Length: 462
Ligand code: S3P
Image 1: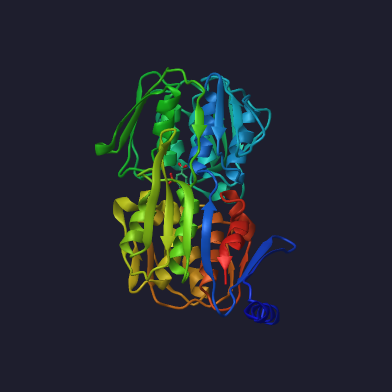
Image 2 (image 1 turned 90 degrees about the horizontal axis):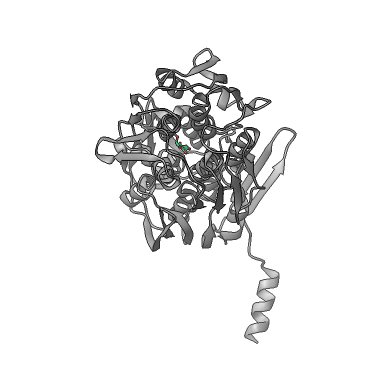
């Protein structure tokens, strides 16, 4: 009898389902998310794609090492594809990209070949800036480099100037913009005091130092991600680090040897689920195999300060990088201040932290984050305007955001401005909004997170 009644009820009152729909328009894709009035929760175990920073470095170091590099867990996003294509054009043999195993036949340090065409770095700042260090120090070859509209508007002076101090010959558009041209040649070592904490700047100079006789050092104002230092050491480079002074040095001339690299899940991609799990009532998510390198875990510290319920389970080491499963459950959040040395350790997570701050009790301050203005979009301006469009109270500051929490979000039409992290942050904001939200140019998510929308659908429950 009970079974029959349940059967009838289930048939006559179907559970409302959330709408999560990606639709093509003439120029782009729009993602519409409409949680049903009863609300949704996120539950399940999530596998996230490989770390973007480590994927780029594994492809690049594999290409310039001697012998074979095997990469497990590579990110299949558009950015690493740009890196692979550039290094194929300069002589490296890189197998078809997949997550199981990518094989790179390295050409050996100093053996990059002059490409027959322009190197196109797409949307990828990491490809553009890191690769420039290798091109500038590759004697006898001429290179031209360009990328998409975003790359052609992002500052390259931050790497051009130190490379020029090393003696590099680089031509660029006014203001240090791409397209760029490089005449590779032998460089001289420098000690560069970077005015910004940037792993792209640091890595560019260290890569240029690989072929430079003597010791090349970079000192930064606070420590940025150290994946280059770790991987360069594993490949056999002569590298030293001094975390006290935020310095890293490379002495040129050591040969690099192909390695087996295991790419952990990207904490910057996990961040969307950490915040979603924390802010969507009733949520309980485990995000598996996340890289927890201490230079990247600022997001965990910021969310802990906001009162999020996140535990680290099954901590282990994967080929030189620490890894854990992250368990997040919904809990009330309170405002906090995110500033100073923490900023480089969560630089890519600020858009999604801004979403968390809209539900937190009190006013969250994000300071010392002017770097966000020169990412794939001006992330301070875009997050402020797009969240305000959804009813949030966000004030833009020259170097950050002030977010008045506890303001309910309302579904609206918003835009990613072709920035992958904005697209995904707004999708998570839509989960707690009343009514439908449409995110234009949502296809940008594929730059770092192909499969984001599918994972959202799989773990959304009414
Ligand atoms: C990256 C460094 C960071 C980060 C980017 C990836 C890297 O940029 O924002 O997504 O892989 O080195 P900056 O070095 O410009 O801060």
